[in-house]
Image (tube, rainbow, N blue to C red):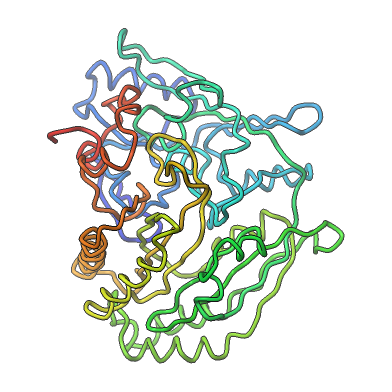
Length: 448
């Protein structure tokens, strides 16, 4: 038995069956065994990097692909790369950088596997790019519904099945190999500073004209936020090996959370002591600037010392002011989260189960509601996080605000919600029941 814990320390479970294949043949053999009833467990899940803080990976049987051989191959002029899907984004971008190549975007963190970011559709903080706009094809292993045999499938971006592969939720099979087109490695100037919330959110289109990537962290109980923004510059304007200095603010917070009893025992909601700390930090933050390549500038959270559980919900930009006001209403009644709320834009897409698939919109506004789990270690405190978010979910729903939720973060979707907000009818033909756990069954199977 092996205890499995997600990165945020919010989810933990003990699978009764844990298998770690050493090559593709062992992987296929395991799948064949499951399909033929060799094991008592007839369903299992494949974790990416355990970055999700929902029950999406919880299962009685787990298949760990971290020991599969990693392969990466470039074409002659380095404009295309083929790689195994168990590379982490961090290591993958580093390999591309050695040839002065890159993808066009990344999410906030970079220790997720390629299979993980594709399966859950990790999104960057920009209305201009997606991570998958350069994705050419994906290979995955699954069980053929007719013959019950283990098969490998390759789905290209021109295939009608492609919208089912990105944001496939691990429900269609096991992603094993990918191919991306590449661009010349881009460089960015970044700035972090505390500004009035309205300066960034009053006209999000103008903010996006000014910056290529940006987000603002709404500081609890304040009408201010910490802006992080990145603008593309030429290589000769950037430090080619540039990186961020250690974030002193997060370092201070981590120290306080770990060593000051008044904070370390505070739980998931803001208290008066923490509110005072945020006021001082906002006053003293100043400005932080850096330049460097995409792989170090855009995954701005990759070295964050804090562990965070979060919900990630997307909204129509036309509803932004209403959402802000409804959040204020709810937090005045029920308390604020103990961490700032990230607000950013995300480019829309056409993937069936994507929370960023919004018809007739070019981009959505994404709210990341975050809770520090370093001070929420008991099950009671974790339940308080869920209850606080459930209350906000209900408050927004009762206000008639439409929204969608990231599958790998905390959410309260059921089948009816999924049927109304996602393209489940187009997706369900690709589902292989072997890969469904309770979490997915409740959301994807009617009457469950």
